Length: 198
Image: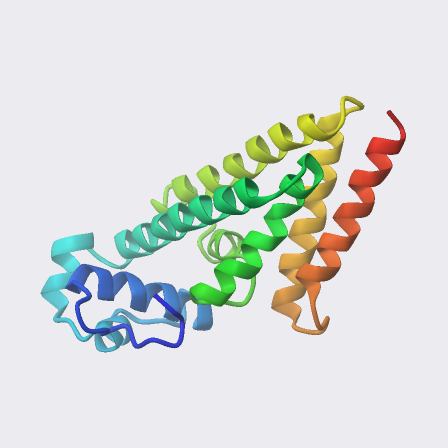
């Protein structure tokens, strides 16, 4: 669903409208500032629908984040598959974020880190999704780095992840014209340096 499309798009199920509304409002305004009533109003559903599908706001938060992770995982893999070289496959992380932001709710930065900050209680159901996203990043970047260099690929993966985290923070600050593009350039330099030192 495009982020310019209303959550009550024709044909969307009540569950889908709730997830769309939650994703948009939580990303734009934050979780704490978004009430259940606001989500219900935006999704055009009755309270009973939310509680029937998600048992409350906490369940909705976790489900919206889980759907975001699924979409992000697929989009990132598609960008990797489309890349022509091992180095470009490692850099596809930045391309995938740009594509995601153009297709779905762009938000203010990384939704997973933002949720972790807003919900520090590790018992919250959303934390399982946050952990899964971190594991995906670390695992996939390490696998991709191993195809680029045999000279300490774990450090390269860690460095690319640090640049990525910085680019996502840059999106939230909103001061750099193109933090993702700049991050991609910095990551490319790290990759080239790793290749040269083999």
